[in-house]
Amino acid sequence: MSLGIALALLGAAFAIGFAGAGSAWGIGIAGAVGAGVLSEDPNKFGQVLLLQALPGTQGIYGLLVGFWVLMKIGFLGGTPVEVSTMQGLAVFFASLPIGIVGFISAIYQGKTAAGSIALIAQRPGETGKAIVLPAMVETYAVLALLASILLLNGIKF
Image (cartoon, rainbow, N blue to C red; front, side, top):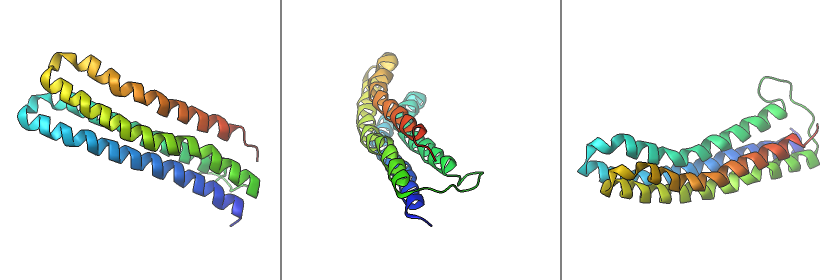
């Protein structure tokens, strides 16, 4: 295996691993608060579940970028291509936006979702507002996903 392939695979692993770890952390934060709310009012399960699930999107975005890398280098359904060291580095760096931003934004989205879960515990009629708050954090994960995809598309093999 060439160093270029190894660097590209490292980029895919970074995108998947860090964005996924951030999502797990964020979902855990929101879930801990959600469990407390549900212990008081199990009828709020649908609202709590929606808010708890929001930080999971960053893990999906990281997985998408990881798969994109694997397809680009021919590891999924194709013949592996020759990847120079510089191309491998380019793929690795293109994977960084979603890995880094996905990790951080998922944690902060989990914290925001936890606050929103507390909001609906006190004011169930404010679910719309409660969803908007963590969705604002999502914006930056979507921008990082877009950046990673655009950077990957700019790499020619």
